[in-house]
Length: 345
Image 1 (tube, one colour):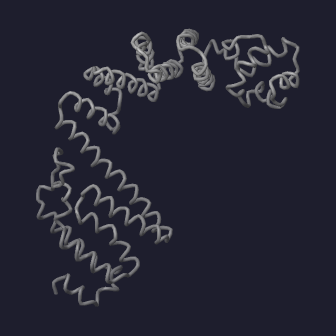
Image 2 (image 1 turned 90 degrees about the vertical axis):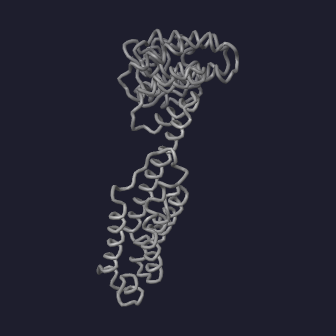
Image 3 (image 1 turned 135 degrees about the vertical axis):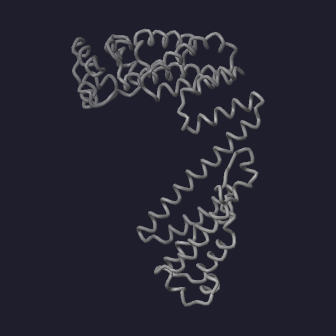
């Protein structure tokens, strides 16, 4: 039975009209009507007054004995938040434990009720955490069996942080198996384990891999916005993105080639002869800096490979740049003396 149906049943049982109930609660009659129709939920601060007015318990008001909806589970968690503000921790803990016994199949409630209580206890900075921790761990372990990947990951995260906080690093590492190997947070957490267990080189390698993949991700995003701006003929925005790309390459020590190349397309589209030749000169003169990041101390613990034939690859890059100058889009510079100079004529 949904909360609206519970309110209606017990309101009628008390011979109260919607108007009378609304007056006693300090709300409007349409608000009560919406609750009963399931179109909205009462505010968290009204749950206890509603239960008292209808002469029922909060458990009855929030009763979903067969199943517990996500909205109802959230309401119980909010009740726990409110109770923790005014009631002793032990009282709220026993109340929460009772709710979890009533709704043993709600993985969401199991996980987040435990997290709310655990977080509050940590903020109290008492010596009582050890007393309650086994129960919290059991809740997290139960949530690990959930079919919901989000709940499962959140439970693994809670267990990881608990064991890291208690210096049980090998135990903490076990829970990283619940994270996708593609998840950057898994790598970050594993780096922390390595750091705390004296595997400094492995930890630094993990952090450097995060830096490198982070650059690629952000660079791709800026690049997409850049092309989107060009598609809409928003050259001001395109210049902003090109500058961001230059600064990003500089910050992550990718090499001069990557810093300069972001402005090439704009120079061609805007038919800016001087800027185009300056960019071309720098690109052709610094093609080897395409692999500049392999020499950066930011990535010194990573194994970064250049192509098997680096010279051949760089020759191909230079030829591609020169071929670009010969294309129709660059016709506006092809009568310039600098054009012949770059092509070696």
